[in-house]
Amino acid sequence: KSITGLKDDPYRSLAGELRRAGGFAKDTTPFSEFLWADFLRRRIPRKSIEDDFSKALDRALAFGRSKDAGYLPGWCGPVADD
Image 1 (cartoon, rainbow, N blue to C red):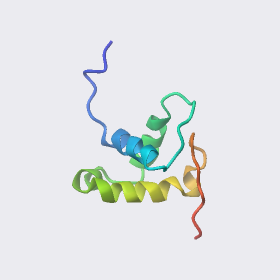
Image 2 (cartoon, rainbow, N blue to C red; image 1 turned 120 degrees about the vertical axis):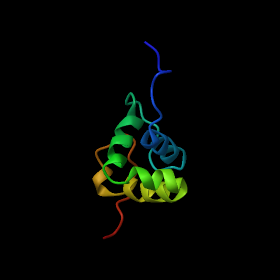
Image 3 (spheres, rainbow, N blue to C red; image 1 turned 45 degrees about the vertical axis):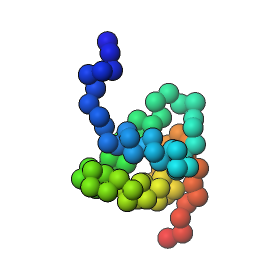
Image 4 (tube, rainbow, N blue to C red; image 1 turned 180 degrees about the vertical axis):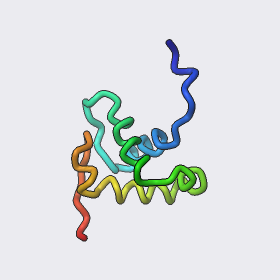
C-alpha cells in the first residue's frame, strides 16, 4: 500500500498548521492530527478553508482552546471565558 493515492485533506492541513501555530502540543498519540482534523471538520466549513486559510486558522485556534477540544491529544487550553 502507498500514500500516493490519498487525496489532500484540507482539514488535515489545517490541523497540521494549527499544531505549528501552538494550537495543540505534539503528542505521543499516533495520528493525533487526524483526530484534530475530524474535530475541526465538524466546526469549520470546507469552503472557509479553501477561501481564506488564514482566517480558518484563526477560527481553528479559537476552537482548539475551547473546552470542547479538551478530550483531544495535545490539548493545551486555556478554556476561553464565556
